[in-house]
Length: 157
Image (cartoon, rainbow, N blue to C red):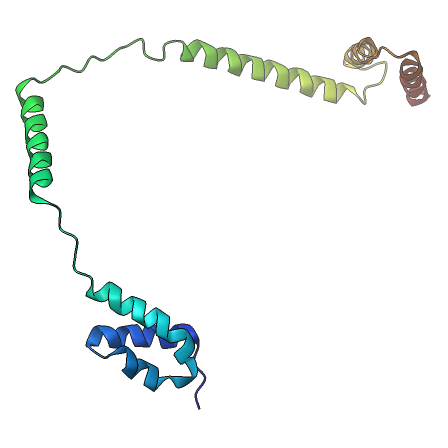
């Protein structure tokens, strides 16, 4: 006996129902799946035999009348589109400012990063000293400040 998945059996039975077979014919064809197939096939048969829902004539006519009236209103009084040239005018200066700030911070960060390994005879050594001082400005605990100063002195040795 050939093994078939339940989904393929169900698909085949639904196709057979569409061709005109009955639910009992499909159940007789696959008795091993009959318990699971029966409620699904009954539901599929009911759905297939349900008549299409048609809209009631008077609401449909009223809706079409509203559509026609709106179309007539739009055609009879065209409204000019007003283009505003100042739309988003604030966006350009903000974008330029952000771009300049981003470039400035990027250049500053790159300079600070390049200065970290500079020696006393290097032009970037003053930047290194300044970054060490700035780092100390943001430490408010004396213990941590001492640790940073010890690390800096060990680095110089």
